[in-house]
Image 1 (tube, rainbow, N blue to C red):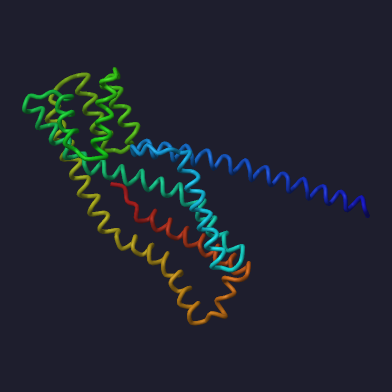
Image 2: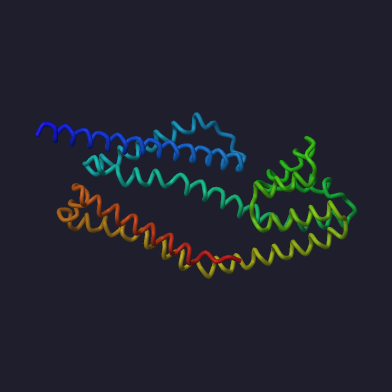
Length: 280
């Protein structure tokens, strides 16, 4: 009997040790990936923040949020939904920052291309015209093209600087402009006409993107309503039937149900977003 107990305890200890090792390795991979992604996003956004100061600040905010959730719930497992949200939120926030910056860059690009075509027709060169236009532009376009010009002054060729620009801003609009400038730099030809055609194409694409966003606004609003309605309904029921709703806040199976609801809600929102995400 003692031998069986010792074997059982040893097996449980080995399994617990293995699970802890797996959890530690998974956390280290997540932390390294998140740190690299944060650094790339901040560098691409020209936000030169110190990661050694940013990480403790984020950890303190997460700890405060978990303690507030545990205090409001009155149980220690109240931190579990908040912890899951804190683990999922940073990649989503970084992705939103990158997409928002790319959209702003694309919205500014047609005006720059049209102005560059006009400067070329007036007899200016590509690089002097770019320097003049970049100085009058606003971020993020001025930052990206300003970095392109600085790379050239440091000795990088125009072709390589264009490829670095496209590597930083990986959008279709940027690819069209980079291809046109690169082909013109190699072969010459009527770059002004090409840029004017590209500017017209980019404006038409922005116009159709605006129409698509207007037509799919109802679907996006439905996803937001679907996300907020259960929370609002839970608050109303907690006010009307506090004893019945207390099972959700004060029992572990209630928190399990809420976590399942949050997961299903997230899947539904992602599905609606995929449906209304129409490529133009």
